[in-house]
Length: 224
Image 1: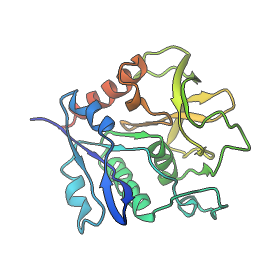
Image 2 (image 1 turned 60 degrees about the horizontal axis):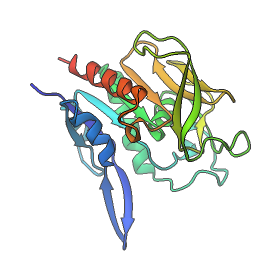
Image 3 (image 1 turned 135 degrees about the vertical axis):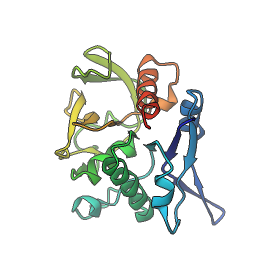
């Protein structure tokens, strides 16, 4: 039986009409690997029933988290906040942890994973290092050895973020960092859960992107 992966929704308002969506790039990276996909929409009265159907989860990129989710006030640097999106990310992450299911976080999803497991964020990197926003490639990450990811000590990726992990959640381990100390990849210490700050879905032919999605799908396929 084929596996089912659930995506977090993101929002777009056009001409006063709110739309929920998943970027097709995320979907393509999974369906081309033989996985069925589903978007968890906002407003479901019983979201747990939907989560129970899924073998794995992807928390996608998107707008900023509300700083209140990590115990801070908005310094005016966190933009386009929607607490409904924060809540649905939280539900998916907590479900994955509770039932030990695979989860991949990307960009905002990387930050959500850290926050909802007890970490915090830098609300803006502008004062620390502006070299993280809109870099198509050549963003160099230093990698620690990890049995699930057979790459070298250094990889080159894209970068499209202005926030980043500050305090790392206790159950997570940083395995990839920029030279300025920004945490770019995290893995859970004991569960099939990991996240990256960059966007591997944008570069499907990259060996790094292939490894990320291949590994995620392999963990999903192991689900009973």
